[in-house]
Length: 451
Ligand code: PMP
Image (cartoon, helix red, strand yellow):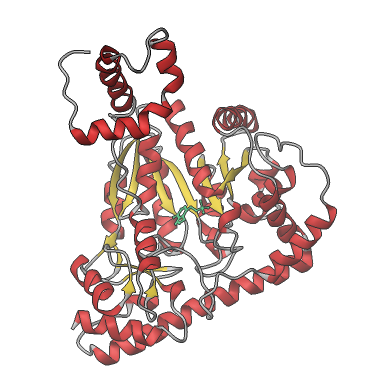
């Protein structure tokens, strides 16, 4: 046990906490001796002390997720007029997470019909997977008919990103994944967690609040062959800056020429232009014949955050390769979490396939998108009136739940401390957290820190 010193605090800690915890091991190690024996204590204490400190002493503290930590800080803030624009969740005008009527109706039907709960297959429920394919590509797409598209149901699209990342690491072990600068923080975490090297390509233009499209194309045209390029299909998180349809068309030949592997992240389908238009890049790539991956989510579009409904789709060169790709995705799922949960996926499948519920859902998505757009307009009106010299039109052109406000980290801190308005220190604001009661206060606070 070597040289050893126990301070008074450690001694007390051992007596109170360690002794009961290790009593079995203690009896086994010191069977014959009584507790009245002084030398027993001399031997036992260092031994207990080592048991206590050695096992996990190398485990470092977790710094916490910046978004979730800020959300927790908001919860603890005692101010009653505080405003939470940190987390990526759609709130309605009453500041509530909506239960969409289409999803509620689907749930009643699914519950009424529910029977036994067997395990789902590793790849998820067949009706969910088919419905996802039709949603992404359109039911009649030639790639689906050719059998070269495989889809698995995943634990949120985060699960889809993770299974996709593991797949890439296994079959392109030395490749690099390029993500936009900036991107959703968890992209880097997921891909690095799978052992991939993550690099960035230029994306956001801080000077204009728009896209550095030429710089992006230039960087990608020099990328190593078979690099993976993570692209936000719509409603870029965190900036709200998207490619136009024409820009997607211009990007495609660069991807083809360098034999890059696109990985589309479609977490906000319907929040950009429409459910079908937001799948523009997915359909364009599928039409072109290139191979690519898509992770898509129903967290936001069906307000099903906690149900963890997502999918991973891989478009392959032909049906034979698709069979093997699906097999390996299943193997990956098996060794991670075995199979996905049942309930949420069945709600999604029902909404997507029941014509009446589908029509309801599409209208609900329009309403959520329009409400965000209205908040953007109000923000723009107040800010442009209060800051006449400043161009804030980017609030109108950026799309989806998020906007990059252009605020510095210090200005974001001021917003929080002086006004109780919480946005990320990167300047990312969740516009979907604004409502008719807090939008003006938010705009006034932003104008004050920007002035
Ligand atoms: N991708 C992006 C860009 C996101 O913003 C999010 C959620 N914040 C996800 C993926 C993951 O979504 P989920 O796991 O809830 O489907």
